[in-house]
Image 1 (tube, helix red, strand yellow):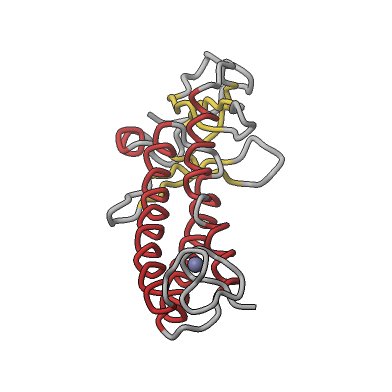
Image 2 (cartoon, helix red, strand yellow):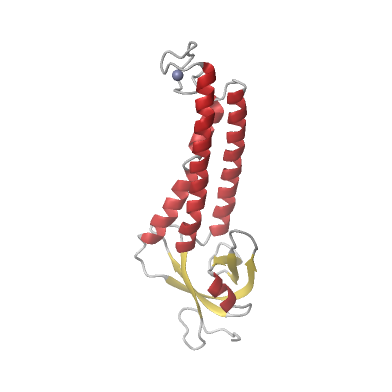
Length: 210
Ligand SMILES: [Zn+2]
């Protein structure tokens, strides 16, 4: 089965009787549209950053890995689609996968925004200890406090914080991580405060050096 690269009509004659484009013209229009769509996709991955900064999910690093994999596959598909369109080869299956991946970063960004923006529940407070810190140079500088986990999911949590909190805390500090449950059920970090000894909230006061 062949499809018109412009309008998607099945087994089009030359020129396509649905949109009137020749094979060559349809391929040209398709490749130009591919550039726009890829740009819109990349803008979506950019939109993820402010959303994740405003309402940082606890599982931010896993989400970034997921987004990175999706972006890699999408860009690879864009290159393959462009090449196949130029060589006038069939590409309908690849195009469908490409189309399905396009809205993902926008959906994920919107989800994070809605998840935090409409979350009216008071945060739960987890008292824990900073074990180490992690940052990386580059355009998007992640700042993470590695703390011992208060959940049953694991031994450590990688808490996304801003630059101020990152420099304020050091290994061994007792901290209160305020976690919101999330409007869409994605737990996110409201803020991180220093845990003062004697003001025990849930866990007993623990040794810390300030
Ligand atoms: Zn057509």
